[in-house]
Image (cartoon, rainbow, N blue to C red; front, side, top):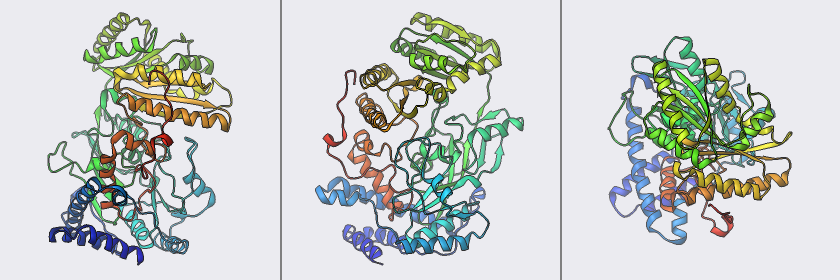
Length: 575
């Protein structure tokens, strides 16, 4: 009751300027005063224009106005008022409230294993083998099977002021699904893994978020449908997690990222328990602003995706080639000319000399590689002749830039073997230091600045005695480094080196993350990258949609600004 009163008082003080603003505040307060009730259901595939849809529209309009007002206040207020206007709620229910919420969830989901507080299950959902960010267990894990189930979970969370943490494939590396310190409800989407409809003529699929991209492509292949979903992050990634982190992969140079038009629409449960569908299934639309993209990269902080329509691409023949270069700059210059030539490139990967050395040490490759900076190409074309023409053009351009040892696969099996050497990046890199652990991170810069980033990073890591390998999606400037360590002291050195790498990328007009998302690992760098005004706008949107800050709190949005001297490390040359 005190929290509700405080929110009402704050809203009324901020919005008393005009009667129109008072109406906006009333709309927001009506949401905040809502309690658990009858779950809202909606047949997304039929696009129902029901009373629930009208409520969703009203909520969206109210959210937009509230967000604009909040942003205005954040941008035009100074000092303490500015910080207060963008500060997110951190007051949640009591431990007793959380116990009541769990009891209610057990009543709502009586099925075996639908709700669990087993310690091993909580541990598995609160920690990750993929990163070294602090772990934190949720209070309970719930496995919904439908949009209505998610609505029930969210309404229970609102009733008891309990955080909600969406959980998908668990392949993320920035602590994207950690529970807050107070605990919360982990919503594991793995049971929502159905394909709802395949529209081959329209080249799209409607599916639930728990299905993996590899599983989806396998099903399309089994059905004899010559289409595929081209975004290719880690093998265990699911469609919902891919949307939520704004992912991409090796195919990005040809097909772009999750922020392109691959996600046509999404059905989303908002923090109020309302269900919306961001748009219809048409291939393109200029109806209003693109609300689908509002949820791409939001990491579950604005809503939980329960259904999505994704575009598919034609599955074309491919082959693979590998070529060595005297240095990274020559390789990058060659790639720039190749891409601008317009030939059929699906992937082009930079693997540094340390990676090639590690591949040889690993012993899983069918050949011994020259330990030089190398490019791995995947060519794409409708016919063998088209593939050969692309190979001929690429070979000529690489030779012009000092490339040697051009190797073109002579069969599909050889192509798969060559590409597998690139895909074995993690296990090959581990061979450099037997028994070591690895910190994987990524940044991204304009492709022409990639050599500066690589040279600066290699010089820094060598100066600090950190073993490493570097792999880059060189066609779009995305840079991955794998830092190896064997003890806690070396871990902290690796952690500091990641920070310097990020500042180096930002100094080159890049980003702190090309495809891994923000999570808890990189949120302190967001203000430096985007600017205080943009971060304030993001927080205003978050507060408008999720005023209680229940959805995945502690991710994406940075806390109050830290002094630069407490955040930045000295950069080495080439930064």
